[in-house]
Length: 216
Picture 1 (tube, rainbow, N blue to C red):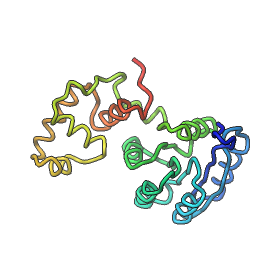
Picture 2 (cartoon, rainbow, N blue to C red):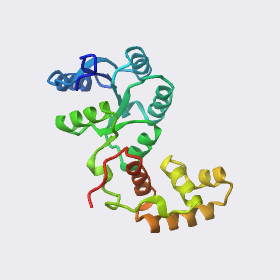
Picture 3 (cartoon, rainbow, N blue to C red):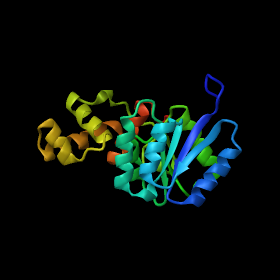
């Protein structure tokens, strides 16, 4: 992947473990499309490095803690031309994966992934796409039904679910009762065929083009 000025896409790594950084450096050394640009072993240092170098992709280690990662994502969203962020770690569940994407991560990857999956993820986000491992997409019913069948209020509820809001927060935002939100969600699930909040949010990401369409 070569930019318009003929340079490689750059990658910055922010990880708690120097050995993991060296592993990523080794993987990228064999790439004709991506270039290792720098690394930090502290989250604050990593954010500043990303701001200073403006890399194409930045990898953040979930090992820094969920609070720190979400704060870093929020800080990086305020930076012009910031990197596409990939969060990787151990024990990442589907729900947390979705929350990270909702918070601004363009890719979420388990540290147990092989080198091929790592490169696939980095290349995808460098191209402006969102990347999640296949196992994180299996809870959604393939295909789904477009949200065009939803009422205006159901659209509002679905959009807030996609943003990660809980029922109580949705009720407060829309000025309705929590029980009413539950009724709307029941109708939304029935109409779209999505399985729960996680499946609904994935449907929304697909509909917006952030994820590839599921096979029929």
